[in-house]
Length: 67
Image 1 (tube, rainbow, N blue to C red):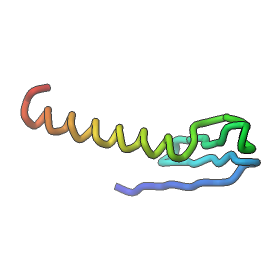
Image 2: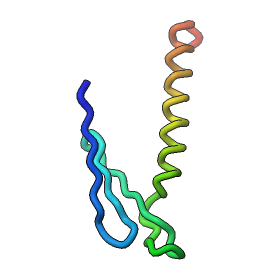
Image 3: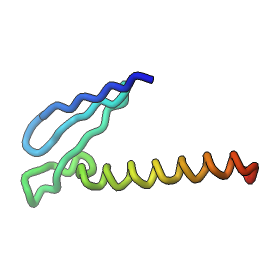
Image 4: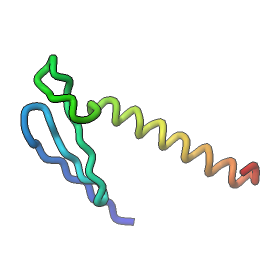
């Protein structure tokens, strides 16, 4: 499976990332120069970790025929 990821700076503290055709907006809060147009990169990393862990758990539960 081929993956495609690109990130571009838009303005101030805003970056847009395109991941396999899905656009993600990253920004900072106003206190540090952003417009709060999207989550911070650290928040996205934590969300990705939670999603990855959840998908692993679901996969294991399906193999165990629990789901």
